[in-house]
Amino acid sequence: MIKAILFDLDDTLINHDSAIRDATGALFNRVLPAREQEHTAFTKRWILLNREWYKKFFAPQVTFQESGRGKLREAFSMYGCRFEDIEADILGDFQ
Image (cartoon, rainbow, N blue to C red; front, side):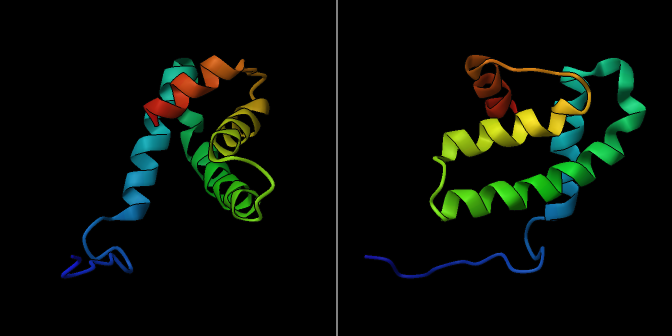
C-alpha cells in the first residue's frame, strides 16, 4: 500500500538546472571533447529539444526510445554528427 507520495517541485530536492548542465556537459564532451567551449549553447539547444521530443512522446507520436534517439540526433546534427540506433542508445544511456 502506498503511504506517501513525494514530489520535487521547483528544485526543492534536486537542482534540475544544474543536473541538466552537468549531464549535457558530460555528453557533449564525450562526443566532441575538442569543442568544450560550445557546451553552453548545446545545453540551451538540448533543453528546447527535450521539450519538443517529450511532447511527441506524450502525443504519442514516438516511443520513449525514439524520442531519446531523435533528441540526440537533432542536438548533435548542427555539429555534423550522425548516430546509428545502437550509438544513440549507448549515448542515451550515458546521459
